[in-house]
Amino acid sequence: MAGNRTNRRGTVFPSPVVMLSIIAVAMAAITFVATRGGEPTERDVTPVAQPSTAPPSPTATAAPQAPKPKPKPKPQVRRAKVYVEVYNNSNIRGLAGRVAGRAADVGWQVVGSDNWYGTVPTTTVYHPPRLTAAAKMLARDLGIQRVHPAEGAMKLDRLTIVLTGELG
Image (cartoon, rainbow, N blue to C red; front, side, top):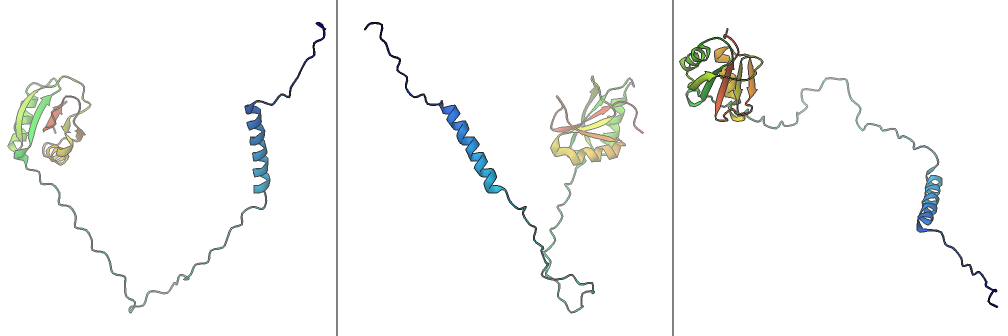
């Protein structure tokens, strides 16, 4: 009796991944069969009113127009209230001082001039966001073509001119 063993085998069920895969394939097949069929048809849309080529009659009343908004007044730039610093980034001696004098002569409040150490592509008026209009006015006053937002360690309460050569 000792050598008489029986193997007992039970029913093996598939793993949950296999079951989910079978369900997904079955759902895809059902969806494919349910959605196949004729292509959607386009409908013709007929306009309610046909456009006329005749000019409007003088008795027709025009729809009331909304009042036009008043344009915002341009900010007034008062030169004497805006600080300006002038820096020389060229080999021309005294250039910053001469340009600072020109700016002061037209009314700008020049608070300093010195040499600039760095790389600037061309003579530029640098400005903080709130002084954009003033920077454009200063550039026009001095004949400077380039106006650019302030960068790096530039002070944000004033305009900064960096000169790369004589002004025209």
